[in-house]
Image (tube, rainbow, N blue to C red; front, side):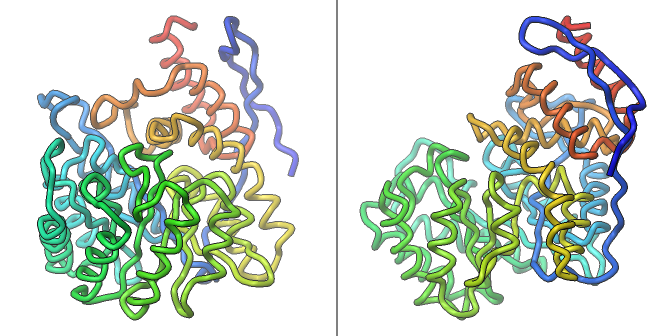
Length: 388
């Protein structure tokens, strides 16, 4: 659909400023029927900019704005993957605040709103060596806390396990023990080292295909306790290879923010469901696209979703672990929060040229819902950076 230019502003490119024409936003309709793919958005948290806490040391969360954003995601038909890495879990957000976030999200959810929450071992102090029984106990504590709230579990990767495991058997021992105890089937999250360098060599091998074999063995042994596996390796061939080997009934949740469009569509041998950080930023477009996919309008699915892929690849470009900055920047541009301040001061993790290109790509995808507001906020940011 042709979109008319409605505003212009100057954006930096390299060492100069150039005029950029901002177009009217695309129009997206909220879903009228459930999606044919399960889709969970890993949601960010909104920091409290007026807190007296030191942002590098303690997390200060604006709970009202954070929950309002979850209602925004639910309104577009998405479930919420709570207290994950998109929420800066273990990267500014500690376990105490994570559990409070999980509690509030579960209480705020309506009857048909899905919340699945991350359980890990991140309350263990960093820099210490832990035994396998200690890691099992740490997982048990977090899983029990979430289940006590009536929550569903996403079993997150453990930095402590990655640091202390001596073989693939150590991973199998931990996961077999935890999965034998959970009340409902869980989603297992294999987060790659591009998202968190401390997780390199997860499942006991730096070769992803060898690691995959260990993971698949765990899934086969515990398939009755596993809803699905989310892999975040940013490699579609690895995801497809693993998807084709999954035990019957175990879902593949794509965590590939580079190739999600084709992985969700799938092929003759299957498809991926979605548990993605980028859904936080592109919820209206992704919702519209999934509605088209549900009625087999694949050309319209791709027409809507294709422009979001360059935006996602930019937000998640290396160093990938800084992607949260782009996610929060999008929420600020679109008026979902009143400031561009993040837990841990992470708003400084991306440079102004990166953010200017993100603005262009968001406009290209039709995702600047209120262009005058977005332009005004972009100008504020450029002024702060001495670019006006």
